[in-house]
Length: 139
Image 1 (cartoon, one colour):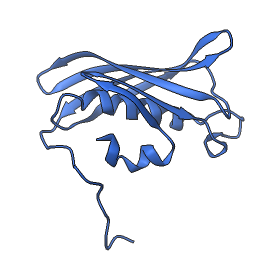
Image 2 (cartoon, helix red, strand yellow):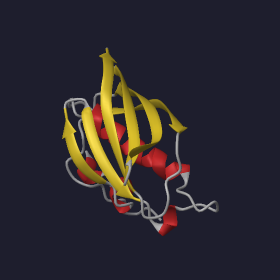
Image 3 (cartoon, one colour):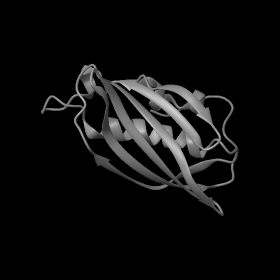
Image 4 (tube, helix red, strand yellow):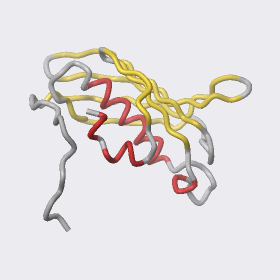
């Protein structure tokens, strides 16, 4: 699934690890991701967490999509910070799942949690596309 995720890869998100109900991804905060307060825009932090959540909830096979998500921002990320998101499955029931994602950065004094994200997934039953889509004819 990540191989055809143009949005995430275009932002430099790297899939570090993926397994049953778990995923780890990383991203460096670039100048285009910093807002007027000179900190990482929360939308980019959310996107990293959401991408990692997507990799974890799609690790079981059938296509799963987000049914909802929420995020708590704990600390600011800044230009140049390398953020790492770790997603872990909490439970699956029927076609639904709940996943927690912690986004952190490594500092000289240790890890600093930047955000905590909880995503709810829903299996929709299609298979993951094998090839990137082309949007021929779309302007």
